[in-house]
Image (cartoon, rainbow, N blue to C red):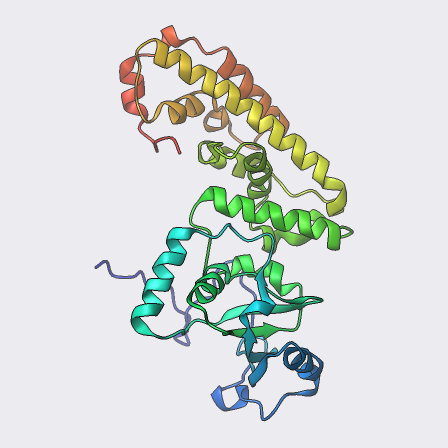
Length: 324
């Protein structure tokens, strides 16, 4: 097993802060995190839990910000996944149900936020589905009073999307939901929730073409895609336009791949080879071109690629990941 790399230490013997991390945790120790009864700030939420047939098991403060939370048992039929998290995988649910059947224990509470018609979980779709399949009547949850945490949970999600497509679709579903609920805030204000702007564009592309090979273009997009400094409700059309340009590039790349195949070149790396060959970023020093300029250049090069100028040894040297 590889030895984990040690973090650089300060003179006081503490790990140095990571770049971009400004959080200073509270000084609360274990005894101070326990709350005797439900604090005033959570009494309304506790009442809603009880009104829905749930039961508050405890109240406590989490150690980083000292925010008060409820630990509760909720009726499973009063909890639903948020609309923007990744689709439930039947294979994952099967694995969970078998594990629960063997251990006869449920040890992993979900996060839940209050909605007008019950509760929503932004990170527990698989666990919730597994418990419902097994016939459980209740699910354990950490109930968070702030609804906006449901959107921030993607950055904290223990059920993290396993691949680029799932992650991008989660982001775009969240994007559409926020555009309706909080569309007056700038797109850049949601950098934590969306993680990176390229995921937004890729998500819109995946919506239009489920079998789109987004991984081939992700490295280039990360260098040129940026958040808009405009209200979220006004950026939907621009994201749709970026996704369409990306799909047009993909269509041109697929055409170039077919030309190479017709010439007798076969490899699982053909698409990656074409994308690398038409991508000018590796030759550009200084500031990269804009999103539109880059995709226009790459699309033009893909459409104009001459398969006769590609040698077998060029393909062999390219390596890279196979197509998705």
